[in-house]
Image (cartoon, rainbow, N blue to C red):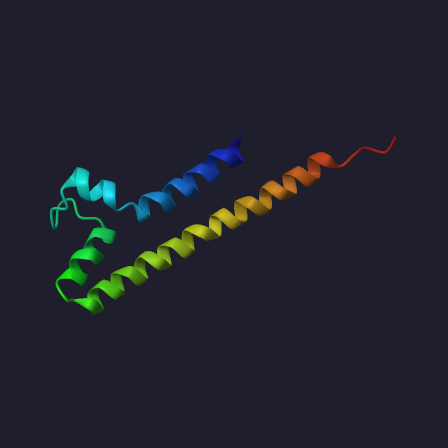
Length: 91
């Protein structure tokens, strides 16, 4: 159960980082108040600030990669737990 909760937390974080449409509709995309990083990338790109948009997109990409590392670790630990539970005692 603990691995499932941890796995869910990791995937929820990744999903929240990439949320775009719902945040734009619900929050109104108010600069400096309700603007998230994906919305900032869009605004910077629309205002022809491509270097700024690219830098922010790289930050998002880096955070995404870093959030995948715990996911991989949890998957490996889950596989080890399953193998340990499948070990049959000598009869």
